[in-house]
Image (cartoon, rainbow over the protein chains, first blue to last red):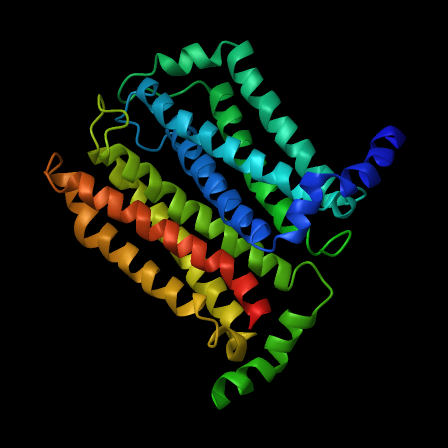
Length: 166
Length: 155
């Protein structure tokens, strides 16, 4: 942790960080793109989660993976713009509790996806035809996915209010 | 204008705006983001479907997303009214604000008058154009909404 902390003053003075700080359009532009990403992630991953939980049961589950790809694309958008925020204002993020919780929840969401594959639930879900009910464990993973991403959004919003002020 | 100032100064508005508690203004703002993610996120999924994603499946079952979209819309109408009520005089002078409202209205009309018909009669030639228009309008609405926080600071 101390090693990371000592990196912050260095990062804060690097050329990319100065660029973000000195150009007032960068931050709002990335904010807009960060929101585009979260919308794509939540809507498209949420679609598969909802099917697993039992909404739109007439649909086979497998083709919904094509939406999930767009969700992953959205995550990439939000991740890159999030990285730009961190590089621009690293001192604001270090020591911020909602920021650490947000990163932890993103990591948990990643582990949740890992569990989806590792436990074989992925194959069971892919095999779901029209009208088929998903296994209970798959429903737990889908519910965890929705909850974790809502939690990530909550922590993101709280960054400004809890911990250090932006 | 006087009404907006009166509204802003009511005890309830002042409490939400100036409370130190995370259950005041921050929570209202979070719910507004949450409602947006449901509303726009699911509309984007419908747009993608109309543009040819997951071609193998029918679009009709996606009409079950409409009640959820309405839940997102309702959350945002309520939290939006609160956010406007606690800071009306500033919001009304923010050019991003009417832009956002007009785009949301257009987006909802596209969804309810145009895209909803695709659930019962899919495969029209106009489906793709509607989906592209919907994506553009909602991108504009989200952009205007997000920029309200920054336009305010310039003015």
